[in-house]
Length: 114
Image (cartoon, rainbow, N blue to C red):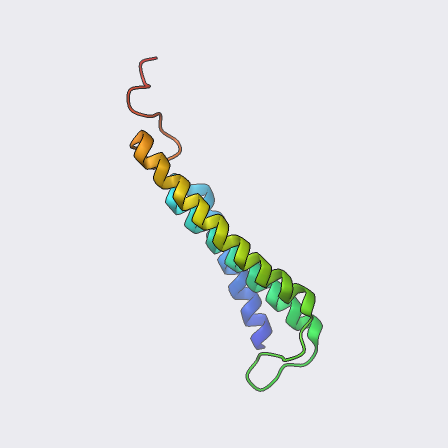
């Protein structure tokens, strides 16, 4: 098993764990973390795709001449994911302050009888 294959399998595992967390957990913070885990798996898979298209591996397992387009997409995606996570956490804090709830599947307090 080569290093590229191992990285690809780890990326697929991260995507699977992220999807599981996104679907099965009702907490908004857990959904944000699961979405970040899913994004990390996608970024790792893009890195594997860039490496496979780049040619031979070096002794450390990381090639110096990978395809630059997927690498640029990963770097841009990391910046966008960080900004989106910061906005999502800020909105979640506002939701928790305004409605005293942190899950997305329950009605706010005082709204049950109407």
